Length: 171
Image 1 (cartoon, helix red, strand yellow):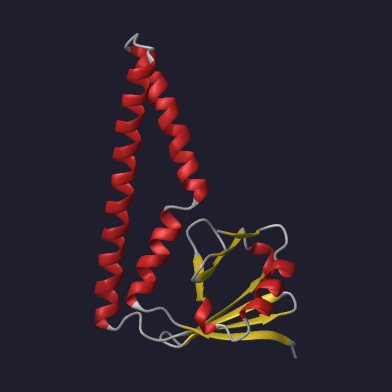
Image 2 (cartoon, rainbow, N blue to C red):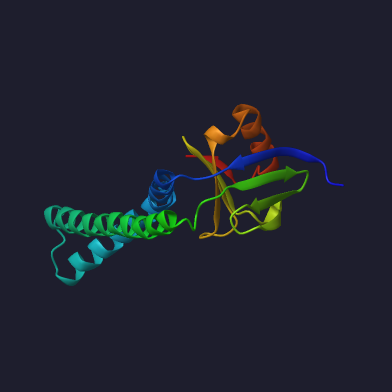
């Protein structure tokens, strides 16, 4: 029988989904990529238009970066309203039970009566934020644990840092 290091019962409220979406969409790495792409597009536009002055570079950058950021906010709210509809219908009610074992994580979902076991080495990112612990198996597959659902959060964070040395970070 597997030894269990931590068992956490966690569920997300409707507002938790919005917080998570904003954290996910405005992660530093994603914002940095948007910044780099904005710089490249700005310089390309200025080069094509033969207007390599500081004023036009700053104007193009501000316009392009602003448009992209507004699009990200609209994307977050459209995703949130889809999730809110599912939540109101009762499709997202229930909780997840996270069982952290020596070398794997088992997640049980009460709403769907299903479970999955994942080895720790498949996670490509584990992020600790102010309110959540985000366990990314892929760039788009994330398990979210609310910190307020963890009894001994300091001990648990040390455990995560030890188990996920290469992919653990705080946000």
